[in-house]
Amino acid sequence: MEGEGNDCAFMGEDSHPGAPLHGNSSILSSTFFLDHVGEVSLVFNSDGLFWEPINSPNADGSICFGIKSRSKAASEIKLSDIYAVELSHHGPIHITNLPHATEHLLFGNDIKLYRFMVYGFIRSKNQLSQWIPTTYTFGHKDFRVCEMWVNKLNVFLDRDVGRPRNLLVFVNPKSGKRNGCKTWEAVGPIFSRAKVETKVIVTKRAGQALDVMSSMTNKELNNYDGVVAVGGDGFFNEILNGFLSPRFKAPNPPTPSDFVHPADDNGDSSVLKENESAQEIPEQCEDKIPFISSEDQSTAKASYNISGETDDEFHILNQRFRIGLIPAGSTDAIVMCTTGTRDAVTSALHIVLGKRVRLDIAQIVRWKATPRSEIQPYMRYTASFAGYGFYGDVITESENYRWMGPKRYDYAGTMVFLKHRSYEAEIAYLDVGSDEPNLTSKRRHEDNMSELNTRKSERRVCCVDCKICNENSDPTSTGISSLTPHLYSEGGKWKKSKGRFLSVGAALISCRNDKAPDGLVVDAHLSDGFLHLILIRECPHASYLRHLIQLTKSGGSPLNFQFVEHHKTPTFTFTSMGKESVWNLDGEIFEAHQLSAQVFRGLVCLFASGPQV
Image (cartoon, rainbow, N blue to C red; front, side):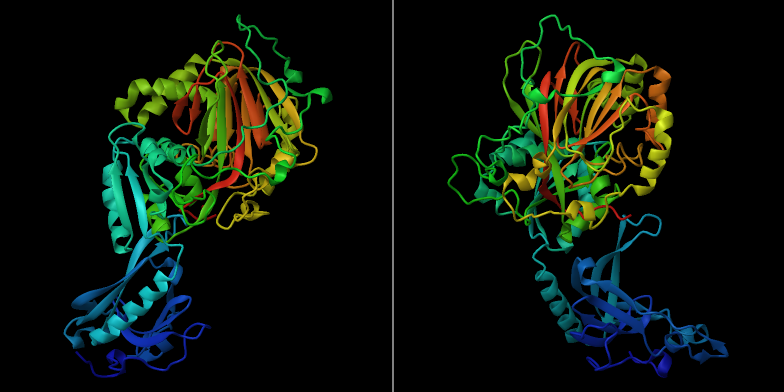
């Protein structure tokens, strides 16, 4: 259909030689009708698609019926934001940029054309980290023109080797509110439209995903560009351990010389006074980092292959294979920290667009399960948080109320808070003189206020293209020193903290969630090689409540208390000294009387880009 006059003229030419709307030379340039806009000049170059209305009073500020219209700026979508392009059948295009008085001269505002759709996303105005799918429908009277554009765009999209083509998907139907399957059904069409092949496994029991991942051969794993977990943090942890445990062989964490020793049968231990809480280990007891028995520790390499396997080699540190997480859990702290929002669609878009961010992983080695058990090392990995005392008691208590869904954590947390239990323990950590000053109980609250206010203004929150995470990062290196750079810092000294603690926490990331908008440590980073050791000493009920309230506030200061110690370290050890709690590893129960931990910087790669700040 053709209209008369400049306001609604239909351009019959396949393309025109007009100047491109952007600086780069155009690959294609044609006139189309854009649904809900009207006739536009569309340009395709190496950056993306750009368009602006033409032959409309809105395009040049022309006067129509005595009313002067303001010109509209060109619109665009970057190639990196396009996840699919498809041809569509002959159908209607709705026109809206006609002068009001002439709208009905075209027998309504719809014209029928051949169409193609461009699928991308826009950022939410209210929350920049949330991505909202959007579709741009372009129409032309010649089917061959639409087909040419679709083919050309798909050629460029296929050249992006970072985009996945084949994924293994695990769905946990019992995660969170038991909506794992519904979540996958909601985002599955995004993968289909992006032409991503998926093999979907809906788990039927706890530990199934771990078993499948750990039993896969390297050859089988190389058939995929990554693995996706549809569930919560605990389910992610299960897949992470199935992926790493059989393939990543690293030395045990370093420990001070007096760490491994038989526990006293009676459980008695001398408790340091408060002003001795963070003591420095005597110089004669300080160890060089006993990381591996090698003449040159810094150039040693970890083993990345399954022992005894003869199939294709699989490298843990490659950039191609990534892990994706689509949130369907109770807290979803990992996805909140890596995408900035707890939104399944946003996570799906990060995955199909091939976004990439590296994530620190902590290796936890349990040396003794109970005080009387023999020393028998058992290893686990964690990606976000390991907590003892309050955190372990909450996860244990919540198991009795699984029928309540995610609300069981609120109920269990209240019950554990009222009991106000503390536990004797000894923690040793490696002080490497990081740029973050430690907050210990030796420092008085009033002496810290000015320092804390200064630190608040200087906090550098992890975000997209984070400079701290990218600083001195070399993903091509396979040396152990690249994964544990802070263990080789000059002047590193072991220090100890001993006494009764309400909780012991080790956060690799900020652990943001709906109830703690800033997380446990607002300026924790995804890939800086550090964990944040947070020790909550025994204190009055009211004081602990104030600490918990600060966690729920945006811009709060949960670490600004005399009974709170905060140490930024690459490694620590823990020994229980009496009645014991359990550890909470990313939402999973882990019993340990004695353990050690270390951080591997950027060990795994995720389908994410970091939160938008």
